[in-house]
Amino acid sequence: MTKLIRDPRIVALLVGAVALFGTALVVPLPSPRQVQEWATSVGPVFPLLFFLVHALVTVAPIPRTVFTVSAGLLFGPLLGITLAVSATTVSAVLAILLVRALDREQVAARLTHPAVRAIDERLARRGWLAVGSLRLIAAVPFSVINYCCGLSSIRFWPYLIATVLGVLPGTIGTVVLGDALTGTTHPAMLALSGVCLAIGLAGLVVDARWKTAPPAPAGAPEPVRTAH
Image (cartoon, rainbow, N blue to C red; front, side, top):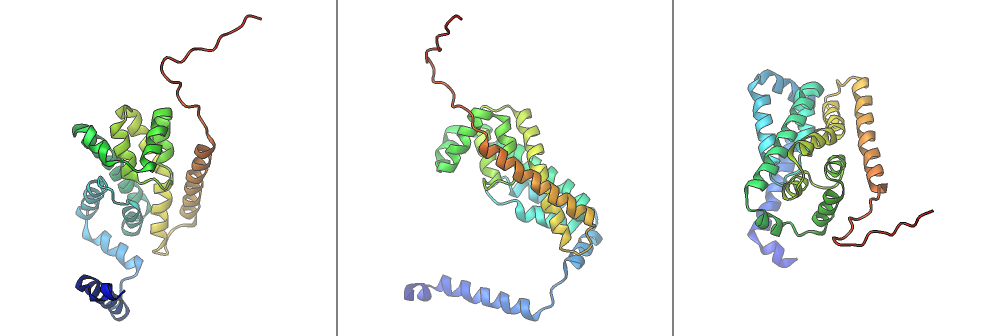
């Protein structure tokens, strides 16, 4: 403990955290509604900039939830959903193309976590169905799924379609919740958010209970059929 206190980096981090907390208490912060009004007043350049940053940053292993909630808070449900889904799709496309353009062996050598192996096994058994199920409200990082798909033999178009269908429920639900922070969300949109989140959770339950037989090893003898 004493060593941590003597570390100047730890001291600087603590001082900075206290300063930020004190500033947040003294300086009046804008309300979520004011933030959304400001984003609208900036003009069409801001949504485009948000889309580009979202699509490029989430190619790296960075959680996209922050961008999804921000899309609803800044742009409302309709534009927010459009930006979040399209940027997520572009990010997934860029990631799989990048992995396949690089040396796959080098990328695979860095993905050694047991969770990554589990994803590889699901992709080998189910292909694009696994992509769709993993895109639901799962704990698996979005970028890790992209990298594993890039290393697999899954075809591009099934991967793209499964990605769009898989991210829709969770993205719509999260964007609407982000817009709900402004206090102006229509009750019907909140109901839609609940339905989408329920679809995502139901998909996870079905996927968890869906057991498929492992592929038979090469050269395994076929079962002998007897005549009746």
